[in-house]
Image: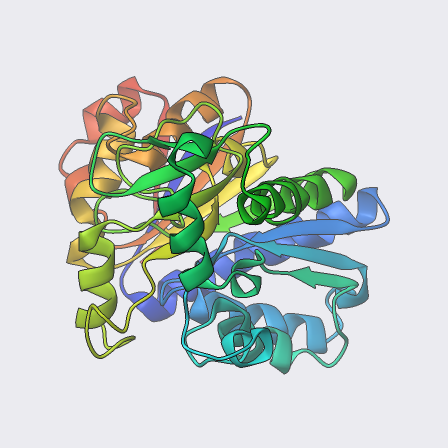
Length: 319
């Protein structure tokens, strides 16, 4: 279905435009079938969108009780002595979703799921990886890598993670009929969720990821954790291959840290170095890809209108 890029003047307008796209898509899907399956992101970029979305649901524009949602990712290794403490940690993505969306809905979704990262004890994970090196291998060409657990690992702990945490989440999405509309942000190095730069596209369904040092440093710099030692070292994440199986993907991005990645994702080569560049192949195969950007994130695209046109990318300035 191609690629459309909306360029807005600021974060407030970005949030309004992105929400309008998502709300209209949701309403149309509800007209066509009983349930809508949404893929949801965390981070700053979608927070304004979520406020508009919750308001629209509460105003009766659509029935929130006909929506299921699956989040992109969750940390492994948040502070806490048990699962409940980790889930309710202020930096958990489960807690984020309650604060930014779920807690604002008068009528709850049918189902809300976040990857099961909080079920994993990071100390036990590190121990299992160290003691069972033949059970797994790294996938990736950069500091951030996915940990591919083999089909029949000797470690019971790694076998449980593969079966119930990774494959289990993918099966839940498949059982729901796949994702109708996926909302994503983008990291400074072009990564989607915790599908880090350099991790291969192929076979990237639901991943166990060893976080890139840059990702950890950014989490500290943004104030999420006091030091690198306090930050989780691992995460569970949908991979780009799974993300771009949705019928529609809406990417929201703002600020200078996203400019280069956004530009390269649409005007550069498709490469694991920029995981969101896989969107080009997705659009060629019939997927609907929508970017909603502020003017700063869009700078690299705005100076190349001919190249955008040559690639069949529709640019809409809605400032």
